[in-house]
Amino acid sequence: MSKRILIVEDEKNLARFVSLELQHEGYDVVTADNGREGLEMALEKDFDLILLDLMLPEMDGFEVTRRLQQEKDTYIMMMIARDSIMDIVAGLDRGADDYIIKPFAIEELLARLRAVLRRVDFENDNGTTKQTTVTYRDLTIEKENRVVRRGDEIIELTKREYELLLTLME
Image 1 (cartoon, rainbow, N blue to C red):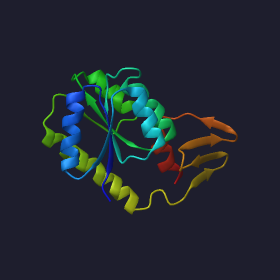
Image 2: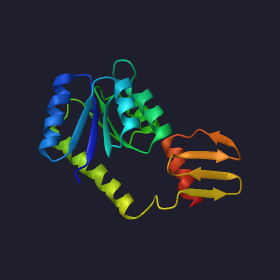
Image 3: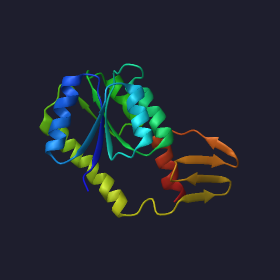
């Protein structure tokens, strides 16, 4: 079964080029041209990876990442038009798993995608999601929907905080 990738990019020529290259490599590709549409698509369907532009109309890549990570555990690679360290750090801190700076060589993008998707396959093969909940005293993690509760109260965590807490609790 081919890997499903969502490209959220408002620059139509770049989105089309990347989409065609990924399809040529055997990936199932869907595109969205603004942040709101990309978020809706990502929440409705399961994707193995999301290629997400930072500067998008209607909702920027930071907000898409933040909202998506509250709902799903999907790998996100940000496409950043500028090489500002602050943008890179902010993207990674908000839940992105990797980034690539535009303009980029398609070979580098493909190599980064293969690396991320190998990690996805490794995690799935090792059954890191077999148990559905993890509990310690009054703290519970519901792994299917990435919800952390203390008693009846939901605790909001970043992706990194969630993963660290899950590791410690397991």
